[in-house]
Amino acid sequence: MEQVSAARKAMSMEQRQQLASFWNGPLQWDVAMGAHCTLRAGGPAEALLVASTLPELCRLIGWLEGQAIRWRVIGRGSNILVGSQGFAGVLITLGGEFCDIRRGGSGSAQPGMETVRVGAGCFAGKLVGWCARNGLAGLEFMAGIPGSIGGAVSMNAGAWGGEIGALVEAVTFVDRHGQVHEMARQELAISYRRLRPLDSELCGAVVVEAALALKQGDPQEILDRCRDLIARRRAKQPSGVASAGSFFKNPPGDSAGRLIEAAGLKGLQRGGALVSTKHANFIVNTGSATAADITELMREVQDRVYRFSGILLEPEVHLL
Picture 1 (cartoon, rainbow, N blue to C red):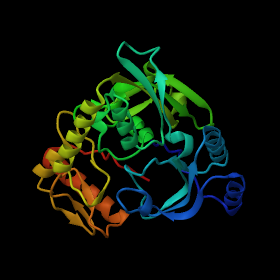
Picture 2 (cartoon, rainbow, N blue to C red):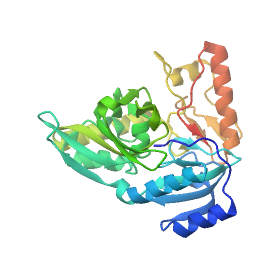
Picture 3 (cartoon, rainbow, N blue to C red):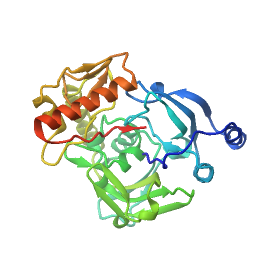
Picture 4 (tube, helix red, strand yellow):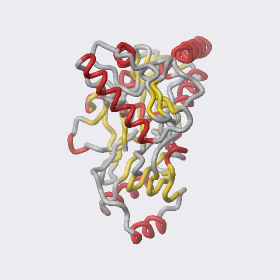
């Protein structure tokens, strides 16, 4: 979900006034981001707003780029951490029509398949539940994964051997000029934890909608599979504490959790941030962690795993 423009200066007072004068949706200033991300930590964002329609998002992005103001679409905040220094610029969440799910027809799909079009702001759990109730299979692996569809698509989210990129028929983007582009699957580069347009001119474009090809199936069987995977997830992963899910990407042929555990780092703590004793690839907030605690722990884990194994772990969490 979730691209960022190049580093820019903070807004001037005049720019703040201009934004407030034309923005009709929810807009907050100087927002502590701990309340808006699943790690429950983070410095202040200069502005946080909700875009509800495609035209207003296009206008906003065009204005921000024209004013050289830093911005980012953040989805549900499940894979971000705003540093203690804060975010000088505008953070955007997607609501309204960006949360819609609709049947896209079966004209281009294979027999027994159906296309579903879903907005980038839709909560992943909402889509999984909708598909189960409507007898559409393929997304069960996402049951229990937090965050929005925009973030899931741009990160090519996956679990239990499945990836959302395998289901993508097309993705609609808004580029840095506020222009809309619908890209077919063959126009996309899809790889581990990444999905982007092949066209380099669309670098930094934002996912606003995805068309997914799903298989028709029995609603009860789909629901049962979702419940089973949620139960297995809960048995393996820490609960009752704030986290961003898996913190590091798995290196080729290995798992980050195994490497962290093998390096003896389960239970390692810096301030209020802890490497989970239940699953080593989870950095959790024990209740008082700051963004600085989490980034310090992240860097120590990277350093010690590298010294132990020669592998440098790459975060899945985006540091803003």
